[in-house]
Image (tube, rainbow, N blue to C red; front, top):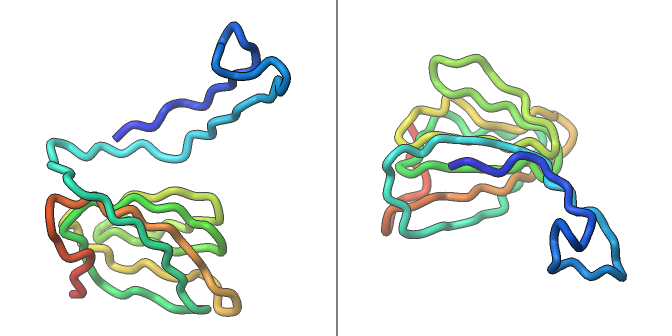
Length: 131
C-alpha cells in the first residue's frame, strides 16, 4: 500500500473542483508507506481502541495486515526481532499479517492512549491471536 506524497492544491487551475471563493490550501501529510504484497483484501474492519495508563497488549499476532494511527497519547510497539518503536500522537504504524508483535502498549503510566486500527481482512478472520 502506498500513500501519496504530501502535496498542496491552491489554485482553480491546479484543481478546478475547488471553488475560487474559498481559495484554501489542502495539505496532505505523508504518514506511512507499507507493502502488502499479493494479499487478498475483501473486507476492512476499523476500530477505535483505548488503552488505560500503562496497559500493554502483550505478545500477539494478526492473521491480517493492520494499519493504524495514534489518535492521542504515545504508544510503544515492538515487532519480534526489531527494536521498540515509540509512536507519538499523529504517528501511523503497520503490523504485517502473521508476524509476532512482542508488545503494543501505552507508553504513559498516567494518561490513556487511543489509536485507530484498520484491519485488512480476507473474508471472515479473527482480528487478533494472543500468544
